Image 1 (cartoon, rainbow, N blue to C red):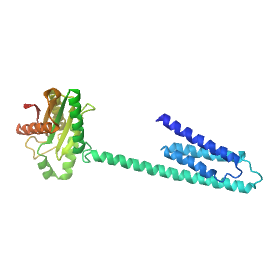
Image 2: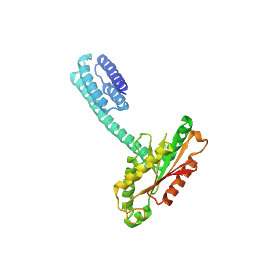
Image 3: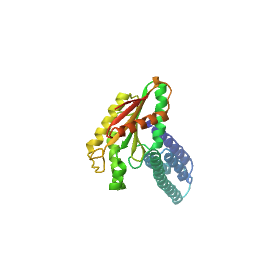
Image 4: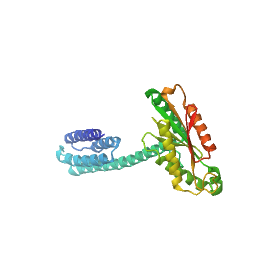
Length: 292
């Protein structure tokens, strides 16, 4: 990127020197402002605001130098100065327009980035949405098969969340979901571990290269992180505060052919067993054997 910037600067200066050379051959320099404007527009397309400022200054400097270098051939001084003034005005107007265009392009890029983020992010919690989760899960599953490793997923459900929402209102419910997401996220320490909102009060964590035992440790860490918040939940039958239940599934490449859908179904089954066990706990599935 640094060398690209240097290259753009060098090209603009070379073009400005060419215009200066043309200017030195003509008595009036009527077209100089237009030619220097082309150089400024080239700086605009480079995408650097600082380059636009710098090249504009160079063009003005070269325009002034051209006044002393050009052959006037008996042309009255006031005509020469008038043409120089018009050229200067053209350069200044072009620079102003270039800076405005640069600012507009930056806003468009920022808006595009925001749209890209919104397309893969749950707006309430800031974690990945279900669509992005499914894409990542498919990718990680194929990688697990290709590299012969293991893959674990965790399905996380907020215990008795409907009662919380009905009792305290949707605004408090959204705040609860946000804080739970932050607590769960804190349990994911590796860069490759990802969390997303699967829907409603349910989250999914994707744990690449993680066996059943490792996933169970992470699940328990999530439960402890949510419990530490001590967020009051008077309608919960699991505790007097907000808790979560976790169900997980692990698949190893050596276990043979499976699918993402089968893993999700297994994790759902584990989550159901976690709730049957009294909630606020974790159950893992590997094949058909549960571990809690």
